[in-house]
Length: 234
Image 1 (tube, rainbow, N blue to C red):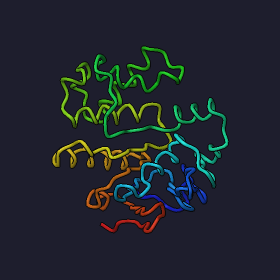
Image 2: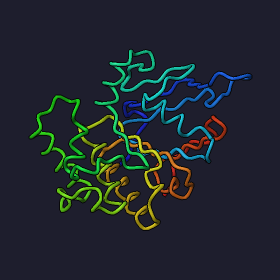
Image 3: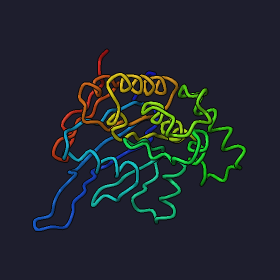
């Protein structure tokens, strides 16, 4: 999918900084400016300790910056009260984590359906949409299987399906291939590329530079600062 600079901004970080009290204060993020536009697939890459996880927390409204602003769909979210902030996370953001975070006693369909618990959707509709999301990620044949019966790659596909539920403005994926072997990693990367081609807006956090280079746009972070941002020429 081709994304132009005229596409609406889904996520904006304006002069975002994050520090923790110490003597002297510990600066984790320094004056971060970043815009993610509708339909983009962006890899944010950096070594351990570079500030990637803190940056994800800012983008996902999981933590508040010490300075600057975070905007989701044009709304400044870092000044919202906690209930409103939870509503933004639940309705406008989808999350994929390295550890999957699936409930072992629930089927794939039931796990995905939990992504709509706070949307006011009926149980029947939640399961219907969950099945559709699982079919979208290639798991239409594993709807009733519990996580213990699924491979690592299949479990991550379930987590991705859950993140896609409710049509979020953006999906944030934190090291989504960190627990997968090389072949399964390739399959999950290909899935993200397919979802991007279908119009999903995705930001992937990774330490893997080779994986990052397979994404349409790369942002590199080091010591809490963005040191490179570019589109990858295929």
